[in-house]
Length: 115
Image (cartoon, rainbow, N blue to C red; front, side, top):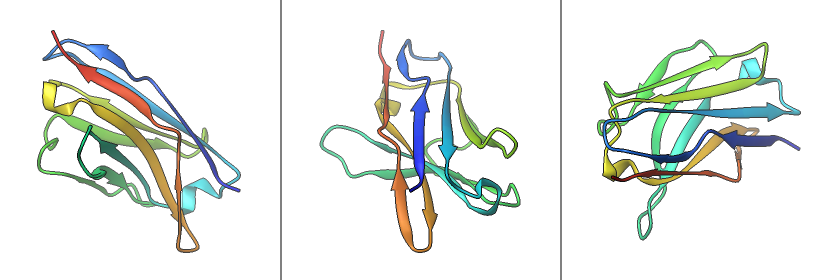
């Protein structure tokens, strides 16, 4: 059973920064792509960023240049550094991985960008 636990969310003013963390357990972490999704109220869950086992990264157009995804295989952790935050970044952020065609999700962490 893969377990993912997110942390690091909170309330931040526009233009501020936050760093999200996701700790994984019971997974051969280094072998799998890890991703961050988000879901705003009334909207569908969307892919924010992903990082492959070979550390290749992809970003949605809405966060490109502002967010950075990274991973630490020794710690079985993936991070999302979020800079220049905007009110439209407000959402619950979820950590994700897919193993044997099964999607695994964390419980989510709330990010609120507001003055």
